[in-house]
Amino acid sequence: MNTPDHSHEQPDLSIVIPLLNEAESLPELYQQVLTALEPTGKSFEILFIDDGSRDGSFEIIRRIREGDKRIRAIQFRRNYGKSAALAVAFEAVRGEVVVTMDSDLQDDPGEVPAMIDQLEEGYDLVSGWKQKRQDPITKTLPSKLFNWVTGRVSGLRLHDFNCGLKVYRREVVETIPVYGDLHRYLPVLAHWSGFRVTERPVQHHPRKYGTSKFGIGRFTHGLFDLLTVYFVSNYTRRPLHLFGSFGLLSFGIGFGFAMYLTWLWLNGIGIGTRPLLQLSVLLMVLGIQLTSIGLIAEMIAHSARRTEDYAVRARLE
Image (cartoon, rainbow, N blue to C red; front, top):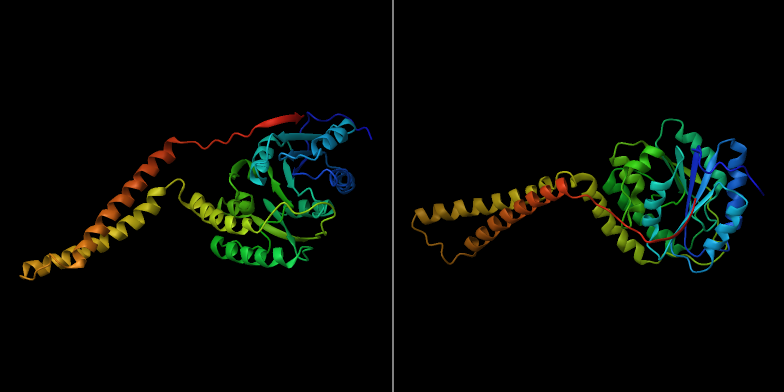
């Protein structure tokens, strides 16, 4: 199949597909994307991010691109993780609407047109909801707990935060940070940044080739990432508000104890052996230290800029 070379024009859609060792899935996935999107009449590009595959996935992509210049690809020298893949992709996309999907054929590209229609109703991000998830219970039960906790902490009530199938307006991916393992929380980050977020039930297929690349450890990582997201979203620009609040509380309690002990001492009651004296001093010192940390963090927040560098082996543009 030969298509016109529109590789340097701005497409309507950018389809972002991170992958790791998915050589068997890629030709079928490519055909599914074409079947889903070509009838819409929208121009599109497909951007594959090869996260250090060792099974020849990039060569499969290279061969597909020989017949379709809408294909673009970036290959990492080693595995950095899905967040890194999305971060690099979000910097490289050209489309006004960005679609992300997994490469294992479990996400259905046929859902994308309806999700784009929902985006055009005034939303900035439409997240897929795997209502009937085709995964073992060892994945579905922890996922339900993860989604419940995330919803309670974030205030954004979605059924499925971690679905790989999402549709974004370009300004969303240009605004929200993606690093570490924060890809799980992109809807939360968008919501806290003021974007309108919704979800849509999508079809989910059983894995056809290979095995899942995610283990049980991702759920413990997810808890720490949720704390990171909460801090980054609420206190990155004002860390003194966090550290200073705890510091002021600690100092205030310690100072109150100290005033009580001073009153006892003025009334002739010995206080030198009271544990409360040591506690009051400890709390006041801790309060001063926390406030000082907050002030230092304020200076860092004003002067530092986060940068991430990923070793890229090859690009297909």
